[in-house]
Image (cartoon, rainbow over all chains, first blue to last red; front, side):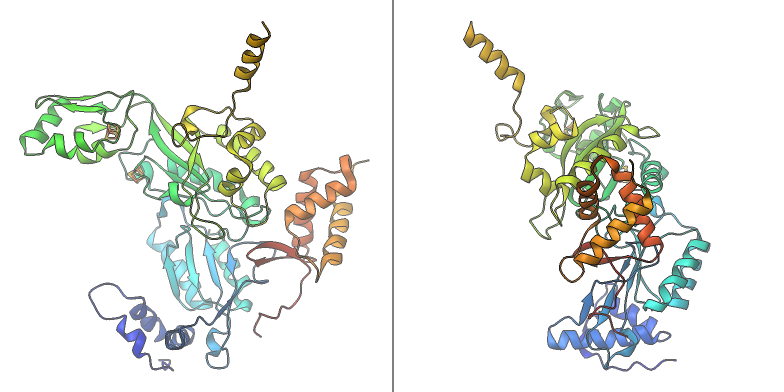
Length: 401
Length: 81
Ligand code: SF4
Ligand code: SF4
């Protein structure tokens, strides 16, 4: 058993309590891995000095790829030689995060042979994250991963590993096959995923319904969220059953409808579907009685991001409703036009949402050849971007008469 | 006359070499530079193929400093032995 080199009183505090502790997990790994042992030492040092001891970036990767490996070095390698290199590897997860136990064992065996043994299943990008290896191990890991049927994920200024909710594999609310779309986009955009060619990162996230379990609306440059365009399916007897069992339909369902398009007269529930915002609230509360409509597809949104260079943005509507059917040409065509424009005009480290804000939505839509529609307006009377030129022409002609 | 992938790769390599130590170039900078240099004799696809050839052959490497760049292989200051 490798000896833990450092005393870690501060980290030990993080083992207390009933919740899972990353310190406990690293200590378990440290029994076999000198890298994990030195990681504990360096972390304790950082807690004592209130300063991070990692250096990031640079030339670290596998031959031919520009993404998937995030270079990290210790700035105190003399004290902790086993974490002198501590690179992170992102591995493209299967759509919806489904594994066989055999696949998981293979991944863990590869990682124990070549790295710290520490994983993050999964990172916020959705990838499988292997934490901590050294440069000489990168090519052997890559080769063993590909033999096991895995590939690296995205990092840097490229398409990041597309990620999706479990969708129709396990969830009755899925309005389209998120897994099929995630897989198709991943395979179709292999070059864009592995060879960074954009001003900055570009993330696709797919949710099967507006519950948006992968939080695509807050985290993806392109969010594809399932929805329906006909009426919510209702089983009236099941609604009454909820009421008979004590549910206060007025306060729990009707009053919380953001569109105020529901009514309950004590016997029957009415929905004015033309005003429904497809928020899923009523369906989540009464899953036995209500279901999404039958005419299903997705809304495509653009532009969300966490605060890095500029503040956080939520996605806004690009295509209010499209049918999601292979080979997904409608999505791919518009995305490729967006990439062309963004590569041409985008600034270094400018996300697509920031780019749209800078050039204006009207100019952006014109350049990618998409007609403006009312659903793109986030707040009524606050949209200074779109000018309907034909109206001006008509006005001018009127004036000439 | 349309340029070959090899000719474009060579021109890109020279751009990267000339910029070394002065400016890090992204794939988009290289593509724009090549289109400016050769006009109608090139397109975006040939630029993509040329970058692929430079990186696959090991003459150039991708690097990351806040964003992704394409550079000549070198040992950086930040790297530990
Ligand atoms: S986003 Fe909707 S379809 Fe996907 S898992 Fe969540 S509830 Fe189900
Ligand atoms: S889905 Fe949302 S907006 Fe539509 S009726 Fe139900 S609660 Fe109202």
